[in-house]
Length: 90
Length: 154
Image 1 (cartoon, rainbow over the protein chains, first blue to last red):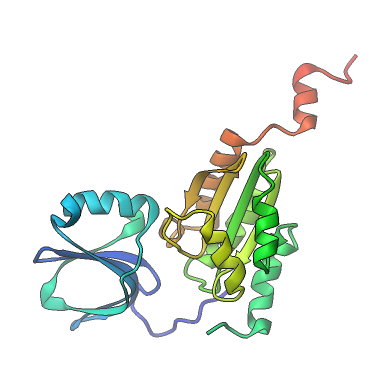
Image 2 (cartoon, rainbow over the protein chains, first blue to last red):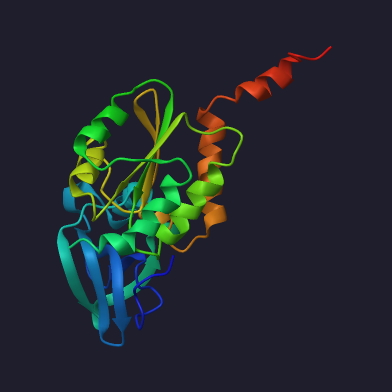
C-alpha cells in the first residue's frame, strides 16, 4: 500500500530524536527538514535534568516505548540542532 | 480527520481477509480484551504507509508461523476513534502510536512493538520480531505436539 507523502525529505514519517546544542532534546515524527530546520509532529520535549533524568535516561525509556506528545507540531531551527537520529535505531 | 472509507477499505481488508478480527466499537474491544485466557495479538492499524505498509504484511507473514496467538484483532487508528481509544486504555503506561502491535498472554501485556520500531524496516523484520514472541508465548499446535510424542504412529 502506497503512502501519501510526496515531495518530503527522506526522514518524513520517521520518528526522530533531535538533540540540540542546549539542554533540550526533542522526539517527534519528522514532517520535513531543510537547510532552515526541521518540522516535527506529535512532539515530546525533555530538558536535561528535568524530573531528575538526563537526556540519556529520557532516551532510554523513549527508545523502548515511545513518547507522550506535548506539542502537535514544532519547528526547530537548524542552528539549534546538534544531531538528528532515528529513534528506532537507538 | 478520518480518510475516506473507500481509501481505507483495502488497508482494513489486508488484515481481515487473513482472519484478523476487526474491532470497530468500544464494546467489541472490551469483549476481545476481557477474554483473558490464552494469547492474543492486537494490531493498531493506520493509514500511513511509512510504517503501516510494512506492519500489515509483517503481521500476515508472522501469522503463517506454526505457533501463533489464539486470537488476533485490529483497531484502525484515525478511523475507528472510539475503538482505538478503548484499546489504548488497556495499556495506560504505553504512549499511543500507530501502527503498533500489542501481544497479550492471559490478560497481561507481555510485548509491545511501537511505531518507531516498525518504521524503516521491512515486513520480514517485523514478522521476525513477532515470530520470536509467538515462539516464546504461544503453545505449539496440536499436530506438532502429536508428532513430538508419536501419537498416531505405529
